[in-house]
Amino acid sequence: DQVSHLREIKCFKVSDTMELDLTTRINLELTSTIRSKSKKGSLLWAIDRTKTAMGGRLLRKWIEEPLIVTSAINSRLDAVEEAESKFIARQEVMDGLTGLYDIERLAAKVSLGSINAREMLSLKHSIGKLPFLVASCKEFSKGIFREITDILDPMEDLYVLLDKAISEDPPVTIKDGDIIKRGFSQECDELYDIARNAKEYILNLEAREKERTGIKNLKIGYNRVFGYYVDVPRSNTTELPAEYTRKQTLANNERYISPELKELEDKILGAQTKRVALEYELFVQIRQTVSDNVSRLFGSARAVALLDVVTSLAQLASEEGYVRPKVDNSEIIDIQGGRHPVVERMLSGDDRFIPNDTALNDENRLMVLTGPNMAGKSTYMRQVALIALMAQVGSFVPAHDAHLGVVD
Image (tube, rainbow, N blue to C red; front, side):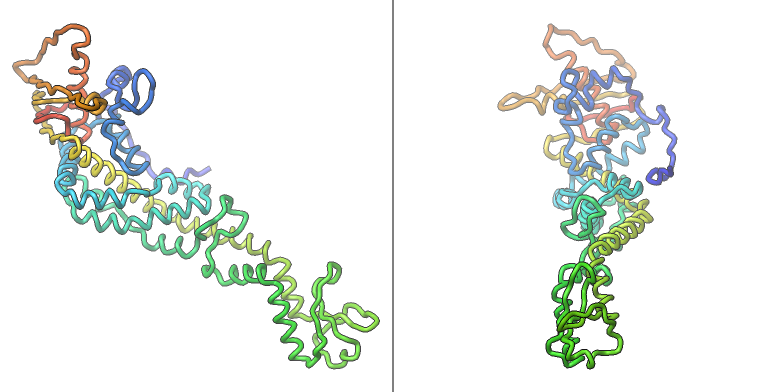
């Protein structure tokens, strides 16, 4: 079948990112720990301040694929630096991201035709937050904020459609009815009213027929054989309209049907079935309209993920006292007062991590690290590796100052 949610093929080259073999990934505990395989205790756990599932996935991707092109690294760092310096604007963005559902996954479900009404409601609530984020982003202009601004689409037209169409409390399945909001479809509203107010419709018709014919004893009844019928005393049958058709004769009464009564009967008896079928049909049309705009959804989902990661890295830097590293193509690793990001976060109470310096360059390319067991040699080595990796992810680093040449 057509895989409609995959819109383009991107060529991935290992040489475009830092080369990290499996052993390195495991020993640096980038996304999970060696022993328990859990997120807690990993680098991702230590630096993740994201508010959305989309941002969480993108941050993981960035950690697993650090950049090796200085212009791209500095574009990320420029954005993080601007977000870190503008506290109020950053908090506004983070507030706007809070409670935002996974637009990327919902867009994929729309494309595959597997989304239900509740998920469509979640999509509506998420799209409803986008105009606020668009306005909040106007405070930022550096680095990848330019890309975010270009692709963040508020999609107000889709919000209006979903707000008018989807009920506020729909069932899980889309074939049980009660998924379309009142006022969206006149036909659907009529069928809803008929199914709910059948008795009232019959009494209204009975009153009209009494007034039209002048027969005060006229009644509308129902049985399973004939359905709805007009019951008239035999003494009044000469006064009936021409369109009445006799169905049954009793000792004192005659029973008739009329075109209007027959039409109302069809509506009442078939209203619920028709309404459920019509609501499903309308939902499919709405889903198709949203599907036609799925590229806009994926674009905004990417923008939200980027916005989430940049602001979360800025929040991390602000909370933990991280600094912007200088990243270039030199042969220098100069870290002043470096700290291990995970060990530092694991410490509690009065414990604090003792900062360490690292100085490697063209002249001093080798460091001999000695000390007894449990002195911290491995922690120091991993600390240098993680600081270099974090810098190439586009994050600020746990140090007083850092100058890092790109590591391939």
